[in-house]
Amino acid sequence: MKILAIIVAVLAATGAGGFIFLALKSQSGTAPGLINGRLAPCPSSPNCVSSEEGTLDSHAVDPLPGAAWEQLPQAIEDLGGVVTDVRDEYMAAEFSSKVMRFVDDVEFRKGEMQVHVRSSSRVGYGDMGVNRKRVEELRAMVEK
Image (cartoon, rainbow, N blue to C red):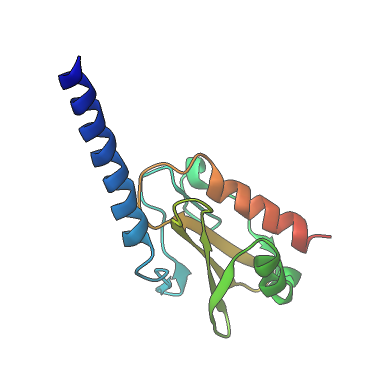
């Protein structure tokens, strides 16, 4: 019984160490930025959503209205994010999870009539719908 307890403790410590490693890894790096004038495509993992044309249905979200551009910095801040880059037609922000401080990148590309959005976790595979929910919360804030 004592050996089983030791094994369980070692496995728990290893798992916790893995989460800490991933959290620290996510805190370094930056958003992918624009690629050929568009937001980067989502990876195959289910921890990313995007409004760019050609995005798989499982990752697709609608773009934001064009008028949202000016409201985005305040909406990002109100949701707990930090704007990290603003250019003429590009904006990037970071959001960190409360407990482990995992970082997600949210990027915006200003189009003629709409604002394209991409929200993605930097590390890991799944996100339990956090990125999609974040985009919808931002949408609700800028469409008021």
